Length: 163
Image (tube, rainbow, N blue to C red):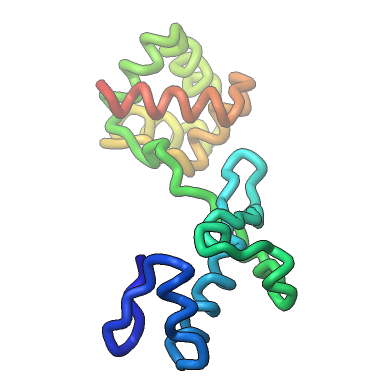
């Protein structure tokens, strides 16, 4: 059912044929034409997909060949869904997640082994920071030293946020 301008309601092909020649007929035909293609977001392939769907036009007795001037829409730029991985956890959460993963001592050893002033700064941050940020330089350095993947870090942050 579609309600058009001036309150005209179209439920069937008979209703549509009854308004032939009126502006509302053209309005309804444009609506039908616009229903043939739709866009669906494919987050796995990281793209948009054009889907051809004739179900609505077929409800009104039309076929795709009745709409020869219809072209698929252009694909919009794909924007990934927001990450569900927390971008920060408290130091307590981080340490508990590392403990649960069996990595707490390895991280403590890696921090202790960092040389020079960067090592001193890392030890201060490890000891006194209130939170660990996913995008911190210290985290990147530790992940590199422990050969951890982004997926492993994401899992630790997700686990930590739940603690």
